Length: 222
Ligand code: HEM
Image (cartoon, rainbow, N blue to C red; front, side, top):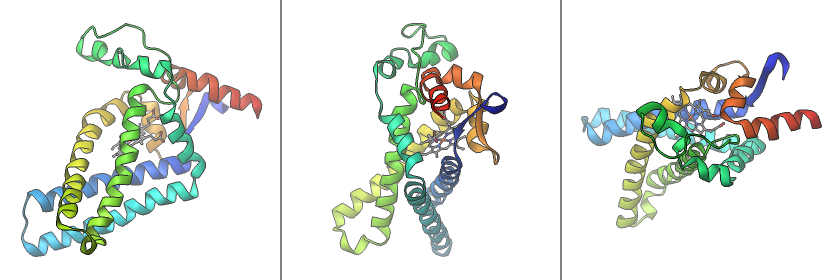
């Protein structure tokens, strides 16, 4: 905890998240452009080629993270799958956000202390990780596997790929990004080119159980 900072995001977390976020939006724009804007044939073809190349980068980013940093992938997954009483109770007042931002007196005033991620983050990160995997699989099915699919399977896979990606993108833009901006420490920690550290204050404030259980104890054991 040199200089009162805590390492929250290791290099593989940062690389995976940044490449994933950039390619996600590039894939979204190229896909939406071809599907909804009906460009002329040559333009549609060039944009689809860009979409496929981006899809390959997106795929290898996910596989690279799992294969090269299995411990980090497992840590994030484990933190998302740990649903204790405090996690469930986070949903009684949605972390106090309705009261704080919209003056809606929803649920108790106190927010129960949270671990590495709060209840809302756990639910949304599970959805995001699941969709990253599902969009990768359906993308390859629609590209390489198309001749093997029946017409109905192809169509359902296509609609899932298009609408699933759009629905999750709406969640990312309307919830994940604005909420991420609430803590500039976390925002800078995951996005900056330097170390993925956050301040002790930010860790104590946003994730007191993680700070107490994992950060302090790990340092003592070391
Ligand atoms: C410009 C867009 C984005 C911004 C500003 C952003 C910001 C952030 C921030 C600040 C965190 C850290 C939260 C914390 O640890 O408390 C985070 C984590 C995460 N984000 Fe994003 N994000 C963006 C795009 C995306 C996209 C497109 C996805 C996937 C659909 C995504 C999935 C995730 C996941 C799974 C985590 C947890 C990973 C970890 O803790 O290492 N993000 N994001």
